[in-house]
Image (cartoon, rainbow, N blue to C red):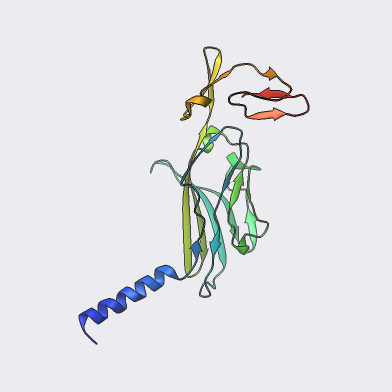
Length: 192
């Protein structure tokens, strides 16, 4: 059946072809993101299909368990041309696919009104047999605690955003050091 070198080269060519062809996750964003509580996040997960990917399209977004004593939590699924958003009660009404038709190559999701409990590793898994691709992103949601007259951001790595006065400031334009929201109707800078 040929020399060992020829067999090895043929085997390597098959392995490389297998890894290049098929479903591919094309998103290249950061693997770790920090957000403040109350903000929204877009988890990017775009993909391309190959001609041999002919099976039904399934997209799963999973919040991976932080340890092996807990189970991974499914948060949203696209399967059989339908979106299923009711898997995780803690995110009910807060998680949605960005695209109205994820089969166009966009499995990205948006989570609104982030909570500290949303911190974790999120896995996007796209399957269209025989192709399978996945992408992980670590999200850290920073909360606040009240200490000595100021709100301190828990887990904040930026010292310029560390302390904020504990009361809202009435301003014509908000110039707070760490203002999360501006209520345009009353021009209050709200820190929570």
